Image (cartoon, rainbow, N blue to C red):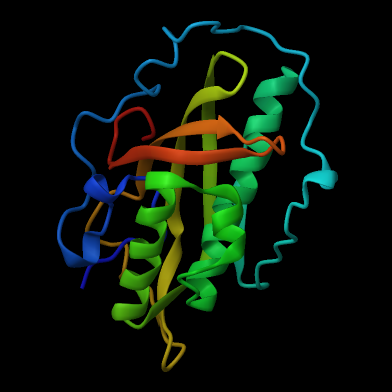
Length: 216
């Protein structure tokens, strides 16, 4: 079995990345920005929006000591973009937490994902359970690019490097150091984000492509 460790279900249900059970990547139509993000009415370059507020009830997420998500270049200097990336960071951590716990109906995931993004995340977590897998190690997230669309929409493209993360058996705890040997460790993600009424930037759709040249 050749499952890459942590393609974090940023794809929609139709483009779910699931290398252990079929394809390695989403369709080649994956883009750097969500279609319509640059052309949306009211598209902005700057915005005075505040950083994420704890008042929105954001859940606390703490990953185990043997798992680490590293976010490089996750600050842009633009308050709105940084707020989006801050919630996206928690979004990624929530998915990691749910995979490690084997929790398909995680309230933390549902807090940061809605619509197609939530549907695909449930399927992705279940796929890990079906294969009796967890994972260990470090995943690096880098090269974020945020394109704003109006006051409440955005497209975010970014890369992931899974070369230091490995599958782990849920039953035995054994780590498979060869689980990432047969395919590229680099994945390009594109996520559609929308700001909720409570001020939380949630993922509502997106796609991903393994081995994208932009991330190598």
